[in-house]
Structure formats: C-alpha cells, structure tokens
Length: 257
Image 1: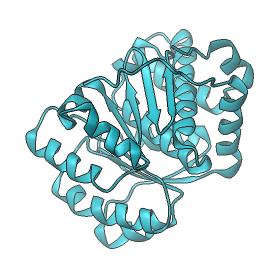
Image 2: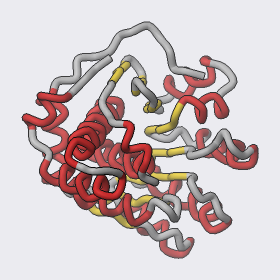
Image 3: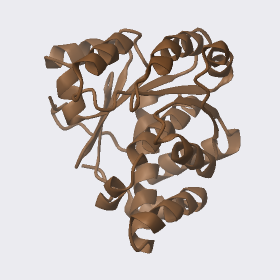
Image 4: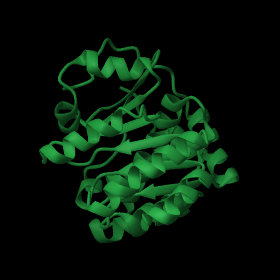
C-alpha cells in the first residue's frame, strides 16, 4: 500500500536541512541501535561520520540503561533472533519513559508472517517514526485508515522508494534524492534509519527531522556514487561525504517531488 495522497509537499529549504545537520554535529546525540548483525558495523560508522555517537548492546541486563540514557532509539528487525525479541520491548519502554524518540524499521516484514506479526505489535507502542518501503507497508497495513490512525497519534512515516514520502500530522514531504548504487551495498537502508533517529533526537518536529535526515543521507549517497568506482569504494566515499557535507552540497542537489 502506498502512502499516495494529494500532493502537499512542504517547502524544505537547503538552509533548514543544513541547519539540522549542524545541530547533529554540534550536539553529538547518542543513538542506541538494536539493528541486524549485517548492519551493525556500517551503521556505527555512518553515525560517527555524521557526528552522532552509536551504541548497540542487545544484552537484556544492559539495554534498559543504554536506551534510557541515549538521545534516540532505533529498532531494526533485519535479524530478528530470540535475543532481540527479548531485548526490544525493554529498550522501547526505557526510551519512551525517558522521553526519547523511537524509530522502527520493519525490515522484511513482508517476507515472514511471524516477523510481520511482531512488527505490528511494535507499532502498537506508537513509535515516533516508522521507516519502511512500500512492500513492507503493504504487509503491515490493510487499509489507509490504519496508517491514518497511527499518524493521528503522532507517528511519522518515512516511506522510501523512487520518490520518498514523509508524512505526519499536517506534514507531507516528497523527496527525490538518492542513487541506485546505494542498493548494491548491504545495510545502507539500515544505516539510513539510524540517521533519521539521530535527526529526530535534535528536532522535535519528527517529520521535518526525517525529511532532513533522509535528504542528507541520500545527497551524500549521490556525491559518493559520483566519486566511487563501484560498491566497494562507495562505502568509504559515503562515510567521507557524510563527514564533510556542506551547505553548498545540499543547496545544489536537494530535490523535492
């Protein structure tokens, strides 16, 4: 199911996007990421290049303290093993009690009925942000009304695709940055979810934070792809570009649908 609604894309200025990037760089928010095993190292490096500070423990005896003391929590279902099933609810409860934004990335919810059911349970916690692709959205929601119900309660959706759509209460951003080469490196989408969590930690308008964070990550991906010779060198170029991204880079490349 697509989040196709009347076009009402808000003005998202390059100045605003860069301002939020600078806020991340200056505040160095701590993001606790319970993510999949394939994505852990890359996600940590992306957060560090961005200016944030990652932590990733899934130990049940530790995660409550880590989640409560972090500035944002990311839940990624890429490898949904028993340890993560046990740890995730503890982390969400701790983050919400501490007033921290919670981002959920229901990776491959369309590939397993058990995973889809678990993701639906997590959505009942009313997360701050859900990042998903259209196939995952179709598995999670039967009707548009189900999406609207969560939006009305404050959840923001960032649905990625050829045109990215970010929607919250009264907000609708349509963005068109990115590069196909990003899909040829594992965990780029997972790391992108961590970037959105970092931005949500410094900006209370979650839809604006998601639109800005996604723009930064995808613009960096475009620049990295233009400098790389393929997937291998893309990784290094992406990290370097996130570290050095300038206001001029954003101004020259920001594309809205």
